[in-house]
Length: 184
Image (cartoon, rainbow, N blue to C red; front, side, top):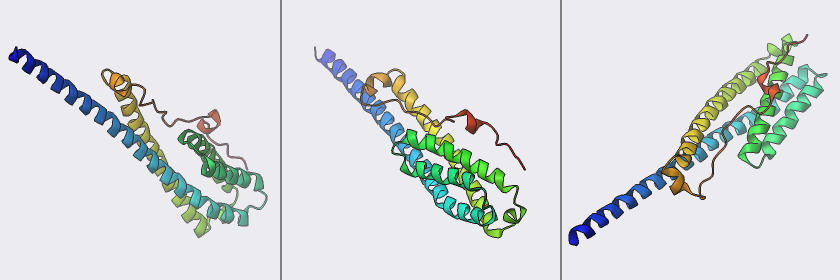
């Protein structure tokens, strides 16, 4: 009888430890997703901080490109006003598209391309875009790992209704996937 109780106690202890280990693993993965998103958010903010200077510099040389500048400004405002990660992802994709159109437009202005301030802003923006791209990949990796943890056995049982599947960062529109057209 005491042997049976000891075996039952050991089995219960193993189950409890397993439950705690899996639950803590899911929580850690969830936290990693939040951390990865914060990295993206910080880079998006850095890009948003660079854009007004870039727009003002381009305005000085390309006065009749107001539509392109307006699209960049509106897209920047949409990123700043986005309330959820999903909305921020979509707005960020639109902003990337608007920025690529702006940088293609700049090709028609050799004196602007030669401007030292513009060159530095363009370098900073390119560096930030690269960091955003890397942060998105890192975020997607975290989301994949987390989603796998909550949808595979036995994590799906432990996750239950408390943990929800997350969405990764993906290109949201065909226009972002297309290369911008260079027109002179």
